[in-house]
Image (cartoon, rainbow, N blue to C red; front, side, top):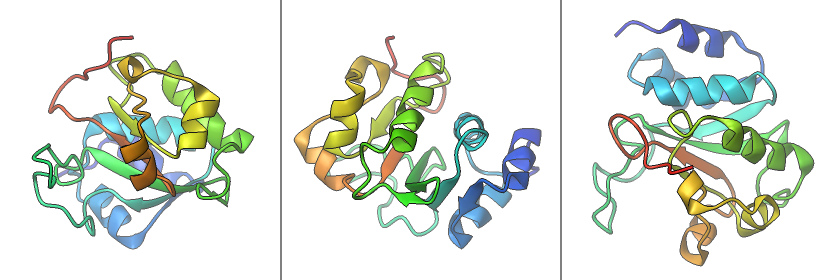
Length: 161
């Protein structure tokens, strides 16, 4: 596959710091263009340390609960640090909270429809699930140390606001 101009722009930013597997995923040209747009938007304002897009994620096409695993389809990303600060232990840091605000400022069709993170991050932001921010104890525990952004549908989003 050929890289899009947004993928090339993202790769050129010194603030975009993917793991080797995430870099390979991006260079493959398979990463969903909506996800590339979101990462480019965020990396233009903050340094992002990316752990996983697809390669290295342990689940197959479906999760244990039977849901679509967006990582498998190159439609999800895990961010482990922002501006050099790990998500774990810095959930309410202004820069990390700002990433949530930037995400919320995106139009519903451009914003990931599954935005997971630590409980304190969600409590600070106070955004709703209809805007894509999924704040529940089960998922907050899973995503206590990173932000997970994903597009669940092949096209469009489930965002209602």
